[in-house]
Length: 404
Image 1: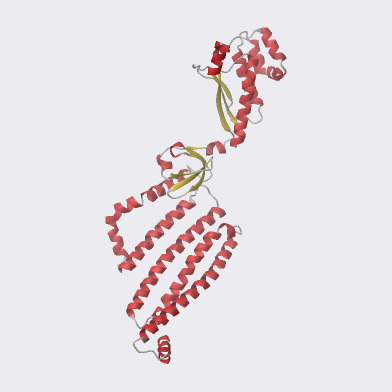
Image 2 (image 1 turned 90 degrees about the vertical axis):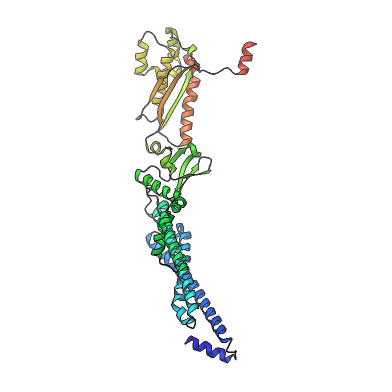
């Protein structure tokens, strides 16, 4: 019917018979282009609202969170509609030429394979992102799983495209892939290793998004922001981004601070090196003077201190250790339910280390550092009261002062 109409139109225009096939071919191509363009714009116009409404029924928040993914999926699906329409009408438009109809059919199938693959990949991305908002679970690597599915989609549709171009069965191509196994393993080495590592990371709950990890080999020290199929992104404390191969989390060692963040406190483990030359016994009159100090009155009322005073030989270092423990027990920011210890370490050439081992109840980094600094500020300031001194190497200026 369309051919007869174009023939009558060519005759009405009084075109020579030699030009009529070319005229009809041009008209058919123009009609095909117009139909394809109309289908594309119509499909794109109604697909986006439908996808938005479906997501709104799941969760209203997803309307904004998945806007980019919805646009991609709608665009790829919109490309499918004109191809399907062209495939349906091509026998009517190109029935006068079997060769042209076969070429158009091949082009349409290649086009369909390409955009079906892109649409599946976009749908996987949309589903993964939607699940990450609807059912957030840090132990499930949504991004890694979506990337693996997209990789498999790419491989399948690449085989279909090649088989269509070569006019061979996909089964024949798959049978020939055995010889290319070594090449494929080399090309997809990172993806394979990353996939295996992702499974082990998820099963063993080794790393989750939001964990603070430390990996000096790769210069990583910060929060994990993304766990993908082949890479893990870490935002360092200076806001730089470090990219680590996913399989490196299995093959190399790293430190995960999640246990500290989930526990009741963050450890404080620091020592003051006491000058050994200042350690001595305390005389009775010196004890009376210490007890009269306003800052130490509450300290001397403690039962442990009373027991210590009953002994005949009291050293200033023992009294200082007792005082440090009392300070930690009174501190509101120290977790009293966890290990709290003031211990003496092996003496060295830089003095006798008195180590504090306790846990800050506040695990926020800034607050933790402030608590730790506040404790040691006061301890360094109280050392002269016990007639003790922290060991410090003599600087060049001090040496010149001593010689003069």
